[in-house]
Image (cartoon, rainbow, N blue to C red):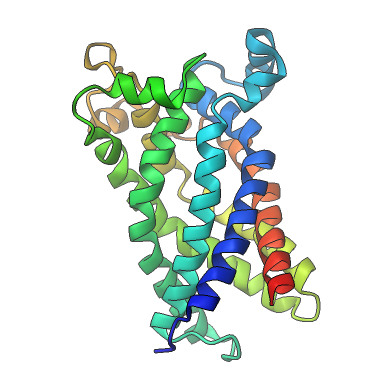
Length: 273
């Protein structure tokens, strides 16, 4: 196992943080559209956008951005650091032969990184979903509405977040590395195209799991007003078509956003080095 130095951790955290800023600024508008469509407010992207413009103008698209902006910075810093650390734990080296055994190790490293990351992502996504579907909602108001049982911040949607990530993380980093390795002579182009491939794969395949998670996390915090009794109730009441509600804006967001994330991450990391 290769040792993990503090210097390497700092480089990864700084690069991941800058990638997180780009993620929030580029991706939040379409993420808001996706959450509102999953919540059942509109069935089409254009219809949802028209309703949002009528509701609060262009500001509607960045409603609730504070939590994901802060969250994306920390999330990407932790994500890339967890991934780079897991690579060293598994024994992956940059000069390894890029064969099937190498990518099997990448799958193991990403699955390992997905578990602790879920405990961070789930609470942040709970706050984000609540602020996106409730006009005028803030981080403080959501925290207040949760009530006395603050454990719900961790519990609500955690199991679905973890299920999505265990599947999604390998589908995120493996396509990225495969495409990037094909463009070994042009790191920035390889990172951009690899990020686009990663964004599509990590959302297109496990999307129904994210749909179930979003239904739970965007549901009312008031037990008396909740639409769903729990995840089993969501699954029973959701058709296959329902499970892909909001899929198009999600993928339209995921491809360019993750292309930018990996481009910024690679560029900042190369500048630091």
